[in-house]
Image (cartoon, rainbow, N blue to C red; front, side, top):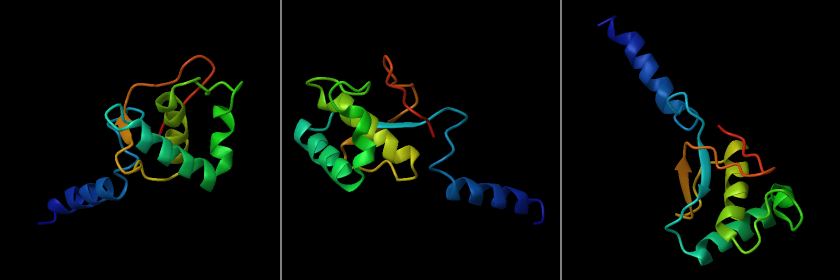
Length: 111
């Protein structure tokens, strides 16, 4: 029975830190390509209203602003919240990816 204890402790830690362990890969929370544009916009508006500084880099002229593409723009904000400690849960407007979505000067942090 004592041989099982290390395994139980390890499994417990995996459950506790499951949002932070990604098999050694970086995890990114981005907009879900299957979600409606309206849902993504609603969640983006919520994020920008609740923590406006999360949206500084998605303003026109800033590196993470993608003119006419709410999905790309929201991806940066969703990921910023996720890296800041929030769950990647935007009522289906999100999806987890393991490939860096950075583009140009818009650099995504990973968790």
